[in-house]
Length: 389
Ligand code: CAA
Image (cartoon, rainbow, N blue to C red):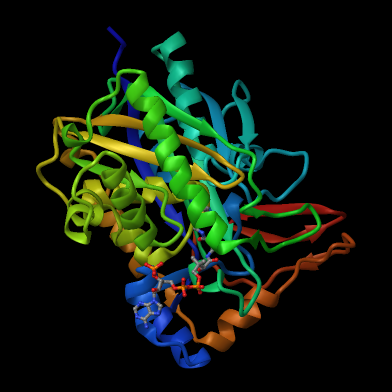
């Protein structure tokens, strides 16, 4: 029998600002239903100039340390595809900002939006080796596409922090996993670019192919049947993608696959993503937060997870919700994180989008914008300077 290991606590943070899609629609003359109905997106988070994956990651993790302390944390795994340095792991900055002990290992993981799941699975394996140990997993990204490109309304930003431990209070991670890798250029970001390049149509097809691929492997390894799974948290580049993916899976399994069927499995997972936008590595775990916060009766039920990272690597696995999850979720805090963002207009968003940090390494103090707990104060001598706010 596998020991119970999984997500013991989950907390998230997002950017300081929010751009409603109604405002974007007004600006560019698009029918707002394309965003609200077609993409299933209502708004997107936009980080302040003095925010990035480090400040969001630290802000997401701080409440976890307040609740559980750090005595048992020996490892920080930081998953991201919008890293701030080619060498140094973002988690090392977070480690200092949070005052964690020297006796910690810290590393960064990358494979597009998938690496949060790689981090979670590696964390489970580490706890399996030593059940007293806890692992802090952080998954955080800022999604940025070129202005006026089709990807623009699917931007967003957030970081999720999860404490992985034995006897978890939220979700026990269960075997088997279904795995899928396919070398495809659907979405990528060359080292010299700050915005991602995406072949939109191909990316949707590649995602659906990965859904089939992971499910096939999952069932071949003795996984559950679809009707034993109460809800599925999908990676959500935009929330209708989760519905599209689930309908694809239903029809692959020979089951009725209209919108009503996908709403049952997916509908409770999309509330946070619809107003935050794509947060890449964090997205699927915001889906889990939404599910836990919007239900009162899924204790002991099995939840599916479909993690997709362009390029591509995907994994399907399941988890079982803990009996007393309602006592440990962070529903009020999560709703506060979303509601305390400052609404901006399209012009202010565009200015933030176009702001570039110096690439020549010259000293620059950044304007104070964030109301969060941590900020990127500036750049000096090619070094990023992070501070508590
Ligand atoms: N009312 C209601 N619905 C409308 C509408 C209206 N007025 N106008 C359009 N729509 C619908 C369309 O019918 C379409 O829905 P279906 O796909 O169900 O037919 C939907 O709105 C989107 O419309 P378009 O396809 O015309 O939109 P687009 O050409 O502008 O591009 C996109 C859509 C390709 C997803 C684009 O937003 C994009 O490139 N996004 C970034 C890439 C991405 O998110 N890919 C997802 C898979 S890859 C992945 O998951 C990894 C990752 O995080 C990036």
